[in-house]
Image 1 (cartoon, helix red, strand yellow):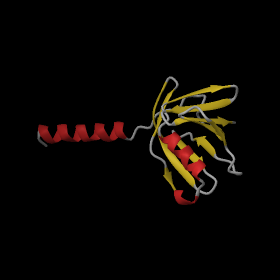
Image 2 (cartoon, rainbow, N blue to C red):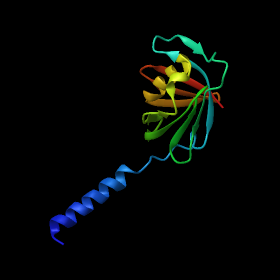
Image 3 (tube, rainbow, N blue to C red):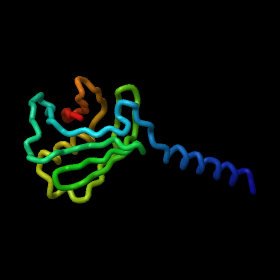
Image 4 (cartoon, helix red, strand yellow):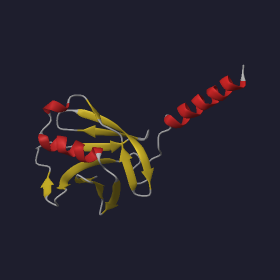
Length: 136
């Protein structure tokens, strides 16, 4: 085997190894489940969940996110996690067309989340489109 082939194999292996590595979740999120209480829009207005159905998220042990909407189920990967910073991958859903607009707005906020904090047993997920406030 030539040195060029060896270098190529080592390079490809390292790309696959780091590309498939999922981020560890912080202890305050790992394995927790939360119910959506409401959304704070970018303009600061508060909108409670009045769909009549629970909207839930669960941070899975595998650094994934399970999202239960009124009609559909979605999943997303946690792409980056640092001290109170979080970035989620795009959500994959069974069929988004049937959920109410409020649930779709929640997905839009989730896709742009950049930071989080927990206060008074509530999880605040914040991003440029607004915030989602969830309770255990």
